[in-house]
Image (cartoon, rainbow, N blue to C red; front, side, top):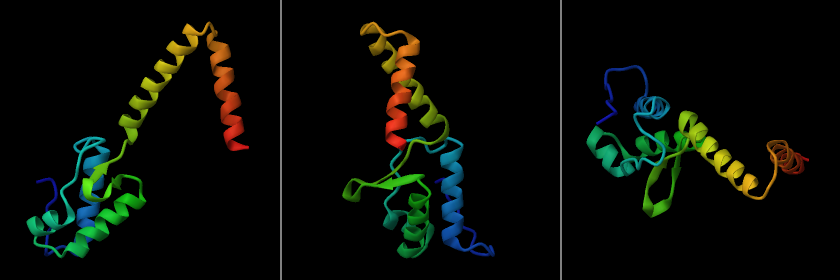
Length: 121
């Protein structure tokens, strides 16, 4: 198991869970799409109250590190290198398609800028 709670620590248990999961997400140990243990199961494994683990999960979700999908579970979101990798893949696909349509790179980029300006303004 990735998370270890030190009962003698001055750091509250929910914060120990939150910070260890956040670190595992940030360093890629828990990759995007990874399904986390259900809260009850993690609480049981760690000897904690379910509300303690629920608070850690809630704070991770508020930080955008995880997303809860109800009965389907809680999953790690795309962040950092995963997000950048997915953005590159989307850009490649876009460039491939605009080339098929006969647009130059400058025209494709101009189109993105127009759309981006419209989305912000």
